[in-house]
Length: 456
Image (cartoon, rainbow, N blue to C red):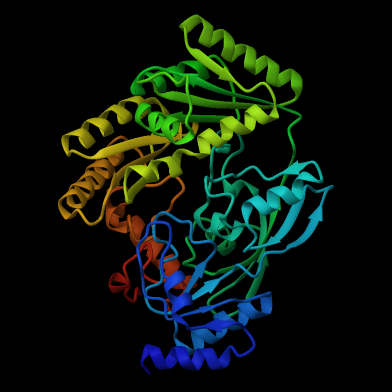
C-alpha cells in the first residue's frame, strides 16, 4: 500500500485523536530551527498516554513513520519529517505530580521548560538544565537531545535529572522505568528509539543568593586562557560563558548598550548558593580581575541580574540581524584547547570570507560556532559547507566531539565517521534496530535510511 493510502488508513484508526492534514499544519510542522523543510503528511496531537500508545501501535500496524516533535527548536533537523506523520506533544503539557520531600516532579513530555521553572518557584525549587530555548523548548525535547545550557558547568545536563520515564516502545507497550537498560538509551537518542510520554525529574532547592558578573577579558583566545587560570584558583561558578568580540559588538548594537570595550571578548559568570559561599566566590573573582586589570560589570540587584541575563540571551536574536541563514554548530573540545580552537576557527572563517561568531558554555568546553550567511548566495553557502567540514575535522583531531547539546539529526550524520569507528557505528545501529525493528521512530536521523539494512 502506498504511503498516502496508509496515512489515510491511520487517520481512520486514530479517530478521536486530533489528526490534521490541512496545509497550515503540514507546512508549519515540516521544519525546525535549522529552517530545513521536510515532508509532513499529517500531524497528530495526542492528549494522553493512551492517545500516544494508540498512535504508536496503529502507526506500526500501518507502517507509517512517526516523527516526535516538542517545540521544533532543534538545530540539527532532529524533528524534521521525511514522509509520515509528526506527533506533536504540545497538548501533553501537564504537571502530574510533585514530591517535595523527594525533590522530584513528574511532568508530561510536552511541558515547556520555562513553564516548569515557573511552577517550581512557588515551592522554592528549581530545575537546573536551561538551554537557550528554555522559554519554548519542551522537557521531552530536552531529554531527546540531552540538553544542557549555561548552568551545565555546575549542575550538569538533562541526563543527571531524569529519575524515571514512561514511554512507548515500537510494539506499542507502555514502559515505566528508571533510566537503566533501554530506558537510559532514550536520553539523547533524538526520538529514534521510542516515544516519551512523561518523566519524573529531580529538582533542587532554589539557591539562597546569586552574583552575576560580566568581565571584559581581552582578545578571544586570551579570554579562554583567563578562564582556565581563574578556574585553577579554585573558583567554582555555576555559570561560565564565553562571548567573542564580534558577538559582543553585535549584542551591544542590538541592545543599544554603551560602555562595552570595543575589540574585547567577554566572560559571563554567575555564582549561586548560600550568601557566605557566593560572597567568598565573588571575592575570589574580584581579586583575580583586580590583579589582572580586568573590567567587571556586577549586577547589584535582581533587576540588574535580569538585565545581564537578557544580554546573554540576546546573543542569538542579535545575530539574526547579520544574515538570513545561520549555520550553527555546537562543537565540544577539551578545556585546555579552547583558546587555540577559537583562534583557528576565526582564521579559517576569514580565509573563506565568512562572517563568523563564537559564543558558548566554555566551562564545559561547548562552543557555538555560527556562520551568518544567506542560503540564496550559493557560492557563499558552498564555502560555509567547506568550513563546517574543516571545523569537524579539526575538532575531531583535537579530541573533541561534533555536538555538545544540539544532537546529530540530519545535519551532522555524514561526519560521524570522524569520531566513531565502523565497529562503534555498527553497534549503535544494532541497538537501534533491536529497539525499533520496523524503523517507525524518526527514520533518517543519525543513520541514513538507505544505509539501514538487516543485520544478522
